[in-house]
Image: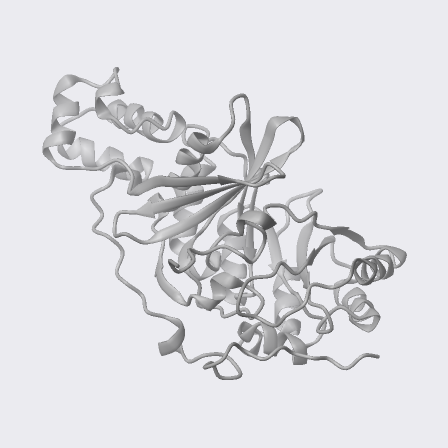
Length: 374
């Protein structure tokens, strides 16, 4: 068995998880004067307070989230008095501006959004067959989890996104789509740990999965987590979405070093939480496993992974590590990836190797986040 070799941090950083003071510098969210921050009931309450009938709020809701209209003057079935009232009360429609679209040679599109407070987030449109795209959604500006193999984790956490800022990514993504295509799946796998921003993520699901809102079925939405056990339990009670676990190690020794969250909730606690998750019929859990050359990619790692996942309705998504500047991790050789996958397949597990997309535009898994200006 090869010894586990963990890369050193970049110069100037210390071993182990950074302190909370180093990792988190949370700015307050912008004042809530955007209509897209309001749920359907919130819009009803607002318009009722103005003396408008309930159905007007439902009309406005569909304009905002089903049709993606951002100019009240285009909402032609609203009364002129209501449109004037919306303008006079200085309610904005959305806080997210699509600032830049970069396209990879493989068709992946990275969308850079500028928020009202000047912060930047990124979302990715991943091409699928038939003119369909999967959208990778961000839930935070930065991330506090400090996963060593992820560029976003090097940024620390600036702030949580609001529910409206997550919804706006979905609505505005249509502006970055090629003609004749559409988004078919939503995955909360962009910047941030979704379950660290639990309430806002669940609120965003209320609109994204509403037939009168963005209209996505729960079965077409996946939330990924690094392993926040209490929030996994809460999610199972409130939202029947798909669950993906960012596992990335087969024992606590390695996972503690590459994913500091494991020191709070270790692998055993995480697997037990996953076993409790109320998975809808005929769906499987996804376990994401980023392969790091010489760290977690041995045959013994694969065999331990088999033992961990036995009896679970699981698929394993093997992700060869995607590089970024300032780290010493190595991408494993193709033969090592195939050997790892073969062991899982030979023992009856469903295991696929993720095809790397968007690598040339820093849009692949683990690469998101605004780079410093040159």
